[in-house]
Length: 491
Ligand SMILES: *Cc1c(COP(=O)(O)O)cnc(C)c1O
Image (cartoon, rainbow, N blue to C red; front, side):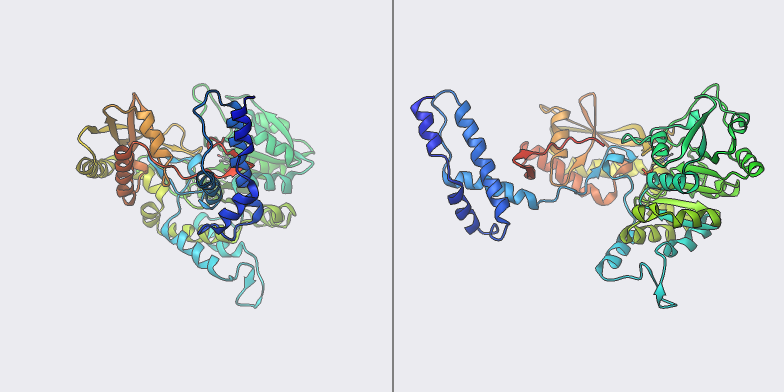
């Protein structure tokens, strides 16, 4: 090591002195000492590493002001929110990575109202005594679906887990091999079943399972017959499955309850709006399923929740299961769910106000009109060198729903002379308010179907900013032990 380096290492900023200076800075007083210290140490250590590695004479130590700035940026970084709203211009309507279903206005208002103060979450106001949190949505859910009783938990994976444990722990669950699905995020139905304490009895083959396969598997150890709606994929071609009514009849003969995991629970007859028919929750209950489970934030378009509906005696058993306490729904979710379900009392309102339903059912002619408006808005404000045109394409339901549904859409195609689409995509993504887009053939594509008109001006501003500056300051990344956390995380 040469003298110059040795000298620089000796002159590295002293952490104590840095801390004193930083704590005097406006806006940085009052942070926990440990955080300030750790941030200073991070800066000094990375500087030390640079000095050690540096070859050549050009490198100089930054001024105290500069190193203070770096530490301040780390500290401030903790304050910038990492969980943020984004604009979804991908055309994937239920985007699992982008939070699935946006909430309707009333749901948001109810969250704020209930969060603001105390609530009657578990208090029966009429009687002045302890109540059940489920009672706030029970009547509504039963009225909307024809169920006898209802219970709500944290999400549908929890619902499946709880139902299996409550009704079939230590017993056998009969399920078709064609329905042993993975849902994403490595959630596999067979794994959940195993953890629930139920023993899995697979029947049939991947593509064909007959009623007689179920019948042969029934024995003294059978707890439930389990049917999983293959909501996120389809088996095509040479296929056969036992339908729900025949499973229900089989269950009745043997006094075995039939549980139907619907995945993406749907209350609206989608085929009336030009989409594939999904079995509605009412259909399944009417067909005699003893218990059905589904998500709150897939086709229903509400908050993350797991809904469990069915015959009173079973719901009662499930409600009393100790695991229910660990999986229970929280009050903010409940507030949002109640407001979302109220929307369904008037299906026309649900279709208009629940964004997932609106995006799924909006006629392509209307999407085109909106796309034209956005394109005109962009042409007025963006520089001439940008080529803007309308492109036809397909949106996707996503979120493990309607896997084969083609949803025609209009996209804004953007090409910028001298800039790659990948470059612009990244800049749009790494803003404070990220705009998530598609790229194909070095063209930027914004699917208007998943964009709300209120987001048009935000998209315009984002593009203006990205294309004008070409180099945008990104919000500082919060660091853990000096390691910049990767933004690329799995699902
Ligand atoms: C999505 C899905 C689940 C899991 O639901 P979450 O609400 O994501 O927990 C379970 N079963 C099926 C069939 C699904 O499609």
